Image (cartoon, rainbow over all chains, first blue to last red; front, side, top):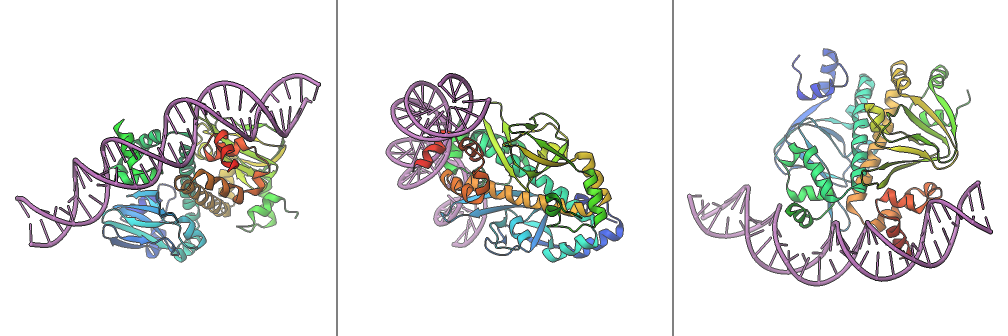
Length: 189
Length: 189
DNA sequence: CGTCTATTTGAATGTACTCAAAAGCGGTGG
DNA sequence: CCACCGCTTTTGAGTACATTCAAATAGACG
């Protein structure tokens, strides 16, 4: 069987028989989105868990004061959703938009629940995915509270070179939690 | 069968037969620790996943500049470890110490691996635990980059009243990522 | 009671934001 | 292909937020 990118991603952590692959793919949907398309709007209930087959996206929050904060960028081979909204089925904290024309595979909330029952190995798969996501966010918290903005900017450049290519300075600033003006002044030095 | 706190915690998300409980408990160890005892030192390989039966703990990092940053506080009914070190079996980023005399249940890394195989339901359990932990950390990142220190302090007080009772101002400051002097000046207003 | 640490206070300094304006850049339509 | 428009990036001045350092006060604990 030809393995799409998402099957390769899954098989980094669990192995699947051909019939399991078929069952999984039957639940999966694939769709193309143009540039700057919103796939989730803050306040909606998030029903889908996305995987980036191609392209790039950004999830972000706009607070009461109107301040925009980028939570994550996602490029090819990344999973993405508003996890808070998805797992609790409560209004989304985040909006998600494409940064360029993108192809997304996704599982509906109900499909994932069925998948966990039909192929319990997926519990393991997502246990590992969430475990890694938890570690990643915890290390980001540590960066946020322990080092200077300049250091965090440099770490971002080193850690995510593929993302840097695709996003604006303004968006990086909103990921770091500083103003574009201040990030600009950092670069000068 | 009498259900200890940890069994109750687990059965919030999965149900266990008496024999499964017995298997699980056979892998679990329980130990008392005095106040201010280190259960993990930054740099060590973290071999254990802890559950707080009683007491309270703090995980924190000290960076090259000597700055101490609190990553989390854990009270009764919380799971705790250096997840980065535990899952990757690499040197710990964090130290963990008791804030008061505490009773901890814990699973050794190898025991947990066996547990996943023997009772696959635990994949589901920890999938949910890590999913929630991921959401929690992501929301903390959002707070860190989007709102003022004063607002974050107030949210901390509201969100974790049981923790506030047990920790010093200095430790809260290091959780928020500000100096104790500055937190003191915030309180004055 | 004495010691050690936490907390408060204040002055000086550095970090980051706000606001406004200019310069740069990319996409679109003529 | 060029001119224009809108958005991003830069620059700078003024202000607000946060740290550093030092010293005084208050609490915790043996």
